[in-house]
Amino acid sequence: MTHEARSEIPTRFMRYFDLRDAFGKPGCPVCRLLEEGSRRNLDNLLYERVNDPGTRDVLRASRGFCNWHAWMLREILHSASGVSILYSDFLVETIRSLKRLAEQPPAASPLRRLWARLGGPRGPAPLRVRERRPPCPACHGWPSEAHDLQTLVAFLEDSEFGAAYERSDGLCLPHLERALSLASPATAIRLLEITVPRLEHLKWELEEFGRKRDYRYAGEERGEEGTAWLRAIEFFVGKPQVFGNDRGGLLPAAAETPAPSPATCPVPADGVERLQFELARARQRLQEVTRAWTEESSRAAALHYQVTQLREEKRRLEFIVAGLRGGDQAWNSLAEHLREQVQALQQRIVELEGRTEVQPGAADGG
Image (cartoon, rainbow, N blue to C red; front, side):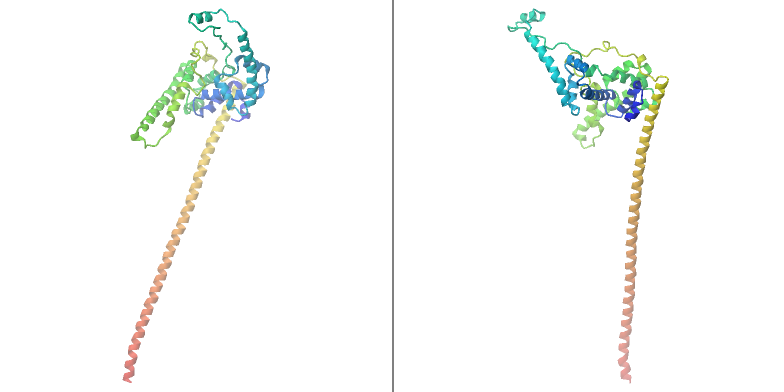
């Protein structure tokens, strides 16, 4: 979808079209949108907000980004300058904090008493350097995950949207579980009806991959099952880094992070926004039909070209065959003509020999 077309879509419906686009790409569509959204926002921050005081205050308090988003900065083109500015600022605050720790006398804290009871070495008890701080702004400041899942379950019963989702790789298990918690009973059943056959096929692919690893079947051609093990990993845990790891403790339970209720799911509105949304959907459908027609036209043109080439080749072969046949006829005519000449010469020789034999007898008779 072009930038001009996107600018006419109401903001509340933008995720509908983002999901439609993500359905046509590999992997969990919600994980993909999280990745793409993070990169866009980090890129925007580095080029437009790196010197904004409010942004710097938030980042300074959190000491920058989490492991995932911090290393994602490396993937952004020409990010070195912005990263240098930000982390130079973070170091100023971190150095100041560490100096304050060094100047503080050891307190008679429960940690110190426990340290002494356990027979720790003399000297100050260990200090808690890593203080609690606000979460990564990229993880908690720009989330679209809940909105994406709400949009998915709200429009899954839509024929075009549902068909596009069926053609996609589907949700990973973490996002599937959250989507099921947001969906109505009917939508949840529909989501499971789409998911279970896909997982059964993935299981078959894994078994087929294992079978072809056996030396007895090693000669068989490999198919898409060669990547089944990677797709199985992504289904269970999502795309790399999206859900982090468990080293910092278990993730908060679903009950601790209230999920939006199905009643808040985005649904088509009345009035102008509804008309704008339907217009955008119609345009997208027109683009899809046009693209399909163009592809079919291209295939038809290619086939027509191949047919034309085959016809030309057929005519060329027919001409060669006709030439060969014509050559055979010419050689046959020449051979026949030569045979006639030979016969005529032989006849002439016979006649001359006969005359030669007759002339001496005639002379004696005279």
